[in-house]
Image (cartoon, rainbow, N blue to C red; front, top):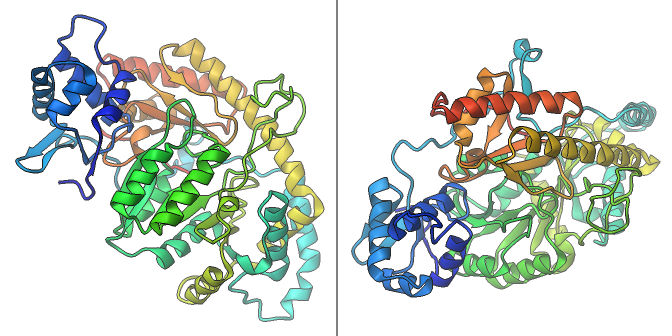
Length: 508
């Protein structure tokens, strides 16, 4: 049986099946349509692996079909390898032997192929100029005052901790410098928090889908991951489902991306944030909120809040409060970094938590990396204090929105059968491939000169097979050419030429 098995109620499964094409509109037998819809939910990640399905009689009543239909559908799923059963334990979802699941290292694009291959695996923009160079120039002027000291600041330079605290406070989350620890990038922050909160064998709840590199880090460390499906059409979290998982699985921690989620772009509304914070507090689960995308909201130039204006101007639409603002008691630990908002080469991240948690993180850091580079910290402090951060963000928001719209137009022209929801911010577009294997598309795309990250990298146990993540980090003619190459790869996969292995794509 799967490492974590949870039960799904008949009414909820019936609702999910309704969105997956059941009952079938054609002449497909009802039992086979039921099995096909469950398989689709499983492969797209809307139904997790290891979920115990309702009893045949209960599901038949919820669907308004005969028990024989449900029994035959369950048997078809067993025959396909998507359902396992044991007397006394019921039936739970599985994946067939040999189903491609991404494993191993995520290899970056070799330098000698950079001119021939368009890399859509890495969601990162070039450095914002002239603001980054100006920040480092000013930081060099600040450096002599620090070279006369030991330069060892495990919690981070005081000037940066203060600037970050002020930034949190301005975003509606009152913060003191004692609540901030500076780290080496967001992954350094997440790794430090993971070491403090969970050990091998502990359960950690994660969104499905979620950020590929964090999922891989958690799996590497021996944690048992409990997936909780995101809502469709960028609707956010399902508070009822989160309450059930937190109650039944009792995870030590939960990793979530409330702001412009990677890979879907979802922005979780305020009421759902408040509901999850309350549920986590009641369950004794620590929420780890990844805010690396939090300030990449797209311009709302028409003032209507939908982000669909003409594209002039650099302002951002009103946004929900930070997740931690809904829990002053300290259930939420927030992680952020400069790598997405500014530049991936600026490896400065941070943790915002209760002072007692920060002190424990700092004490534990003596056994890790001791501290972050002083010059880079001074540069980030300068960006925040001198206005470079906001100026760079305004430029980036406009650029990313233009890239999003270019991808949307190109995809509608080249692959009108594919579908996606336009995100209100962030760096990624989450694309449904109308049943084509994302793993096969990634492998075939590499042969056509375009690298993409297949959906299964962002899920557990091979889920999200019919998805791709496209980063909004290229624009103009490059978008058109990348989508044309991807479309040719899709034609090859549809004709049966695709490979059955996932491509080795560097994901950021």
